[in-house]
Length: 120
Image: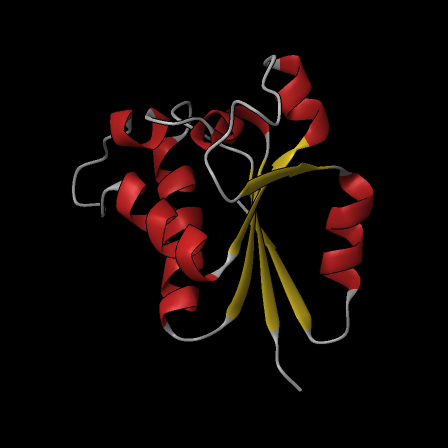
């Protein structure tokens, strides 16, 4: 049975180390061939928008834009419905490959057989 890693990142530029850790773990798992689903919630929701990941900087961390690209290439990226709505982000605003979905979908993914969920 294949395992799935569901990573929920709740931090953005407001907590850069926690944010970068979530993206790094998700991208590393993708590179290792793991099925990955990255959820952008809270302040990390901004990274669903074009150009936002390029603005993120953290010394000694891989560029967030590169990590996001890796995840988008072979994994899934979802922006939280409520978080996006609070920031007036709609489906037409997000990067290609990013979907907007809510808690029911997150719970379904996190509770699926063989799934491991991490929250940062």
